Length: 358
Image (cartoon, rainbow, N blue to C red):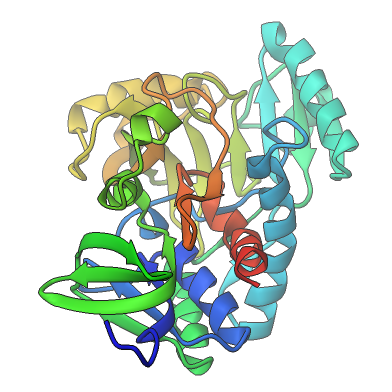
């Protein structure tokens, strides 16, 4: 460790959307920043394996970090994409409810209005006229939702961080974290660097990075539980809305429909504990049944396996848990359990980290 001071002001572990957004925010504050990523390219895990939905922030209790960061991040994301030419569309989202879900849908609408979101209630008659393929007792249209090219967004974050002077080092896994004399020593792939600040944005490995620094993640409730979600592509006819969601449940937002920026119609994800990126073809009938709950005429042979993603949940049962953004010990900021809507919230979470470092 050099007496002249640290090698850099901040080391960000993880080059997904969260890590790169943090790197850009810190570098734009005048800090010397280095991002280290264990894989050979940026955004290769959570950031590139999702629906690409820009969430409005309708789900989640008011006052939680997950909800507030989603709402603030969504505004920042639309502005970012418009300014930097990242492909995106504000499409709106339709949430459909069966007879026994109408009361819960109304509660969801009331919560959305408390958050200042623009929502329209849609009755069965109007839904049948506007969306003849869909069947539901009632629906809620959420204006602020949209879709983004997640790969292009991550790449724009990488370029922006580099433009602010940050370094992005790929293929370097962090193997050790220790603090001495007010500085952090970061061991990675046979190399060592010193820094004042470490930002743990390691996604699926964020709990393991915390453990390298001596944090008892089980005592803190920070153990990451991987939950896999498969996606199937649907060919042929499609609803008018680009985003169609059932009422949430079962550890996620349900098997929903997303028309991505390339025009593909995707069904998914489901939510099951486990990892691995191979899509189980045997799930076809499960997906068909899930979609037929609100699109009864969809044909089974229109479904084909597409891709899978893994979410870093903080509860083994997959139920809701708030984002963790905390400093422990001094100089080490953790972002743990950043699942959906993490992509939407990324710029707001980066602004929070920037304030913590200031």
